[in-house]
Image (cartoon, rainbow, N blue to C red; front, top):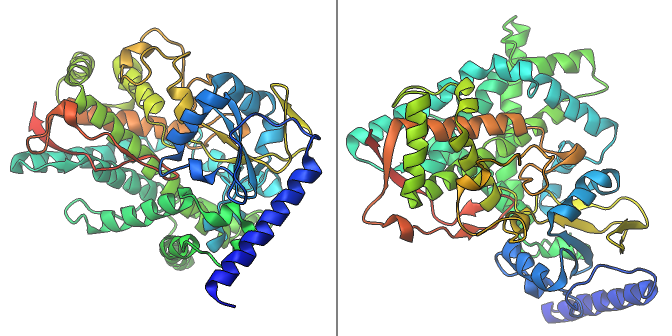
Length: 497
């Protein structure tokens, strides 16, 4: 059978199944409104290369609770803070028990081990408990405070060398290297990237960014599961290539540590704690789980923080008055050019407002992490949400909702000056880390690192764009993926204060 015949056969089969499904369900459920789907493809033609923007525009026509058909998959899109609260808090159990697993992650079976994608159950609780107990408690965070200061200061020293040479700094790559070395030191007490030779940073950066991009790309297999064996866009293949490199790296680190432990060399870092857990509780955790936990920490703990810092610096450079106000506050509270301590952050309200505004306008994960309904007859706002449907919470749209935010497209930190709105999952107008039982466990660490990096960069230097670029003309285009990245890296020249 030739290629054209295969395509016709697959298309005809899918069309028949969709018609059958429609006839069986017609009249039995009152779905939220949405655009009329086309045969076979549904509403896929409406996504474009910027799905977060496309769905934000569609919500203006069809409302904050909208049904879209992506191939064979029914998707419910939530685009208001009120309905986000309903889904993420009031009916959290119905919407949090399962995740939609991108086909890309099936290439390495990551969804079987990751706290992000595991269904809520004994294994999810075990992995989540380990993360919370061994890494994200206030006691553990305080114990590693010196490490965060050390890694941020290395970033500042790198910027100083660039300032002496008059060279531009790639803010995203610098912030990524800082976060990467913080994660690696927390895990196994070593840097994995050097400042004098950026090749290692760029290598890790390329692996992680490939993972984030491939995970977030619209994938035909996710919409037509019967195509899984074909992998028509090659997404699973490319994902396997990037992720296998990170998994192999994690396995080598674990094997080296096991040999060191046999020789009585115990460092008492997170890796040693996890390996001890294997010995004491083999029924709860194994080596494979730790390898995938390392992958999660490298991916979730680096690209998210570095992207936020890069977007914040881009907005600050684009708006010189914001840079002046932030630097004046830092000079008054910390002292011009002095090292920032984490305890200073509570006394820097304008810096905190600037970070909140960055989270609002540039959420790292525009749809958070997709959820999957796990119950029958779930009702939201008078509509039925079908069991098994995918649910996207459009944090990008909520952050730009004109009914909540005045001049929503303007970067204006002052909007948070007297506001009690926070990012910790209780105020649904601003939920960059999600909310409910699926809220990002790394929230406390991520917030500390973003404030510390951004404040240190601003207090140590003045900044100007590379070349003759005028601030107001700076390109602010986005590149869609699991993480919303800048289309172009931010290159800025540090100047002595």
